[in-house]
Length: 202
Ligand code: GAR
Image 1 (spheres, rainbow, N blue to C red):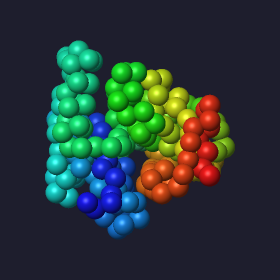
Image 2 (cartoon, helix red, strand yellow; image 1 turned 180 degrees about the vertical axis):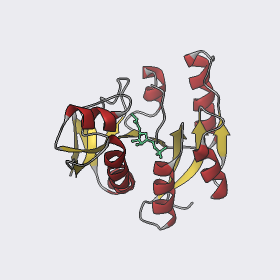
Image 3 (tube, rainbow, N blue to C red; image 1 turned 90 degrees about the vertical axis):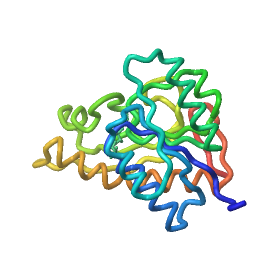
């Protein structure tokens, strides 16, 4: 018994948020251990970053596979690893109601905008192109919508006049790497409940 919560990370790409979570766990800042990293893309660089850290990886290709079949495989991998929580870290697939019900209020996502503004793909570019003066990132519980679940934590990032979408994305990413471990730590160490759309810490 380590007293640590077993967390699975699902990713599709470079995996920098996974690394931020893994390092915060390793430093003891988050009372969790990442027990498996699952990717729907076999070539996701995040898988290599997990292997380097000795964390088990399970690539489960999603392309051309029916959603229910793919999700059943992912669920089996998570259950096989004993995962109690799931952190989506750049996981570019929507999860079904059924999958979410298996981990009710125990699936987290990070999104690179201040939700409910700019859900979906390329949120940083959407925010920059719209001309907002403040953007940021959001950690939220996952429901079956696209970036719609109850919000746990947000961090704001000013948009500068000379920003490009890329420079803004870089500064948002720095805040993501702070926000994601902080949100997981809060949820694992403080009493909380969901009241409608609101996540309340007591
Ligand atoms: C992050 O910016 C994350 O917020 C975003 O994908 C990137 C993944 O980067 N997620 C979404 O847009 C989900 N809607 P990473 O692989 O380096 O963590």
